[in-house]
Length: 199
Image (cartoon, rainbow, N blue to C red; front, side, top):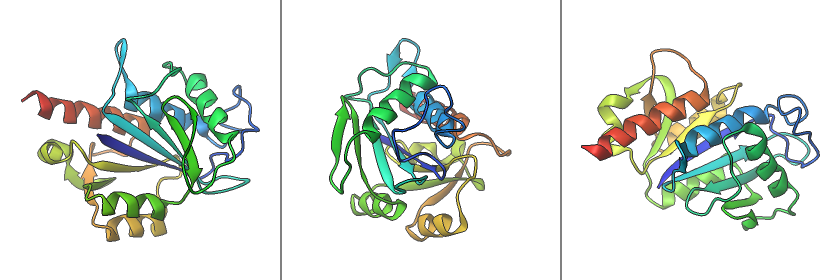
């Protein structure tokens, strides 16, 4: 299972946002929705070996984690409104420390970056942090098919967050010599990892 963690620093933690204004009222939720689409969609199919964990840090209740699982996901279409509608339904739930399923393949709970790092570290999963100047994905992809990838939103990853990820032993991985959008990083990652499986 490939896991993608996307940190949404401004992403709304309330369902009280408009599907017609994802960049504004939802705190750049459009970025997270594009990441979901890049992670899951093939032509006429959905990847069942992928999970996406959205870490929502916006107001009014910062610290919510929404998990999308490709094996169980339903009602997901390749457009931002579809993903946002599933996020909105998840945020309608009264989230606690334990996961609650909102729709098939989507769960929500309270949590932080530290929560996710500790869980995956304790599972023995390989952690990978996407950053310019890291090891080229084309030389490391063979060891990363079941890794956990950390990505930021339009703000990126803060110094404190980066320190936490690196201190947990994450490998620094680069997919391009340029700084590119998180959803584009995910597309490239999936492609490079797919190619190693075909060998």
